[in-house]
Image 1: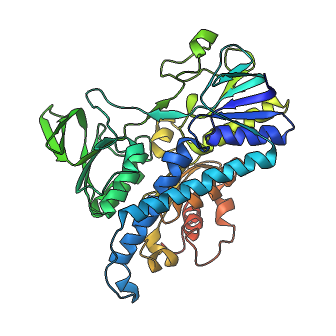
Image 2: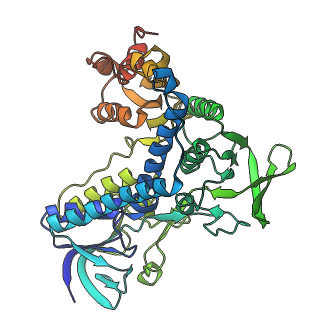
Image 3: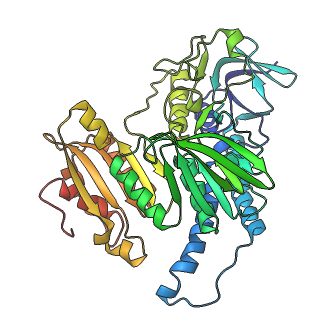
Length: 462
């Protein structure tokens, strides 16, 4: 029986980051992963491969739509789907092998296999049982389906199957207008598929700023995606190489159907804790399947912690990473901290969408007085030069103190620009602090400064 200070179960963003930080803090550390490759859903069948396909298809769009405008002439580029899949796999392999290198560099023991917890302080991997003073559950999440829909990962798929379809379909129905559905729907729309997004609610991107949601839907509609909102899906029927999605409109309960070669079920994710043995241990669980933890990520069993998608909070890789580092600090006897009010969210469509902090809807519900500073990318020289002038930056600030409460961006490189606001919010900055900070010209980030100026006397280029 090998003995460790910490064993982390799960080698995804939360787990591997936690393992590395534990080792850096002087703890004898092991990480258990049964997938056969480190990186979890994110690196293997999620964030990273989807970004590879988003990038490839964005370049395809640029060739077909914008190259001639820039004087770049030539024959239209064709898609080699097998080669694009190979490129995607190269990206995955480079990242997962990189984590193995980091484990060796930091002296983290990599235990390959599925882990379970037969008793407090013990982790079983295969036929071997290892002891640990502390155990961290970082087992992530899995796709959640819908009643009446049988997933085969061939023509009725989750995000996993959608990343590796045998061919580009002529038509696709996406069930769910959240991040996953819109990103992968965008990929296949650019590849030539007729994409229809069916969403139960009356707006896309649930929980996001309402103005941003409307703007994104308008832009994606111009790119060819079709939307059916307020629709409750009843099931999917398979026949003769086609899938028929049956749904009813909530406003009048009228019945409808859409045929498609491929159906992507993108209705969210649920915690993955099967096989750990948590019930037998007496670990308290929450109604939605999450592990219950306290403010230090400790479960109801001493020495057992949980982070990431397995617990309450947004199912985001970077949230899991923050918790992984924080719980490592706690285990090492230090102070671990995660500021849950400053966790950005990003949708990697084109244009990108990024947000952090409060939405207007939330501030109105709270009855908090606020002001809005908004700036359109139509006034940004860099964005116009690269055909990315759709969208805007919106900063929300306290009406009395000018403290930044939130920011919502739809535009080029939004996912990178949002971090200026994250840092500002972490330090309690005002909109004026951002407005008085010199921004390089010409950059997309100037739009953030202009939105901050608009919280005061007004933007310059509006």
